[in-house]
Length: 486
Image (cartoon, rainbow, N blue to C red; front, side, top):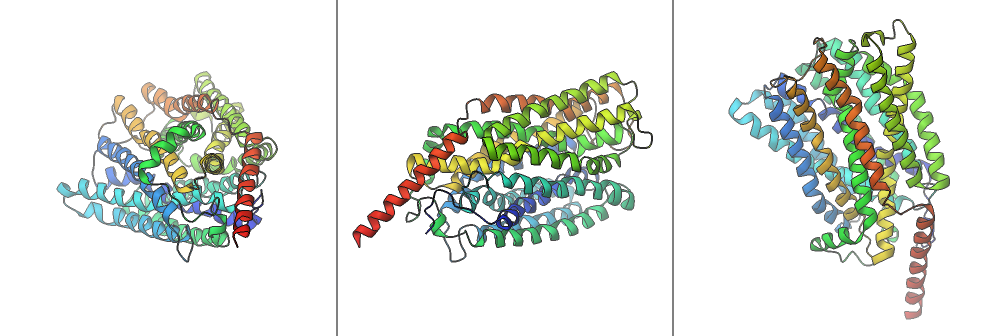
């Protein structure tokens, strides 16, 4: 039995299990380009696709409580989390293949219905696997110096997915296939889904030794919480409420900034060279890693909350600096790696700061959900990590689902109603302003909302230390009672 205050994990277990998030992020990265497939190959309208993607994310959030209930009730000979990783990955990967392979072959009258149905099924599989990342933190480790380590591994892996993936798409696939063609999506899916499957297997290896009943909260005989009790848990858990709102707006900020269309607008039109999106991403890898290590070192000393808020503030300053930079320079195309001047250097510094720090809260939030789950266990005796993670996901999806619709609506206002802005489009004043708003302005505004919500989140380092001691004491008392009863 593991009844000590600190349930420690081996470093490789943390590293391996973090790959579960990488696995689902690869699926999310692939689907980030589905707008170009749906509008350019299948022939669906911009606002229709934007609305469908928003609806799919809303559906993802709606089903999350049921997914959490499944996680909390699951106990098999293979553990609580392992079966869900496998099933979730298979469903999500399978539907991605079907979406990109079949939709354009169907009659126009059924394309929309088919596309929507496949996205819905995809979200079920995606949620099954993705929810395990949050819920599994509770069994992996409760050591306050170890939980922040997730952020380091996740940041490194995300660089591979989002930066490496963008380099792969912009510098290799687009030139090779001549824009976003069907052959491009076929090749992207092949590599992305295979790597995702491998990451899922490593994640299973990482959680395997800890995916046992002795690590499930107070190790009671199953959870007695029912679906109808979810509202009571939400109502009585203020840290869950505040963290969900804060992290949702942080996620919305980065969802808008990372949206494939916004990347095309920023690099392909405003700067006039879409290959810069991958190249600059590669240049910012080292600064991003330094930022991550710095923030995690703060988190290990002073707690997750403080490092979360610091990161959000610096991210805001970085985005604000980028807006000022573009308003001051006469020609955005002077930002180029072919002739590096002051504007290019300032852009690289500000972009590294903005993206590097703004990404940190979305990574730190995963171990923070484990803190919220431990708070609930200490307060009520319930061990419901699935519920905690999926209630969080519900609110997260509800807010972040607005990203496709926001982008679609904003570009629609300036005239892009039948298709999204594409590489090579002329830079007009409305397009210039819209790009700054979507790439930097709205993300900064969302981070401000995130910081306001965190003012009411009280699980700092001292409070979490008291909670872990309390849980350990309860376990110790339960064991003494069991021994006395023999």
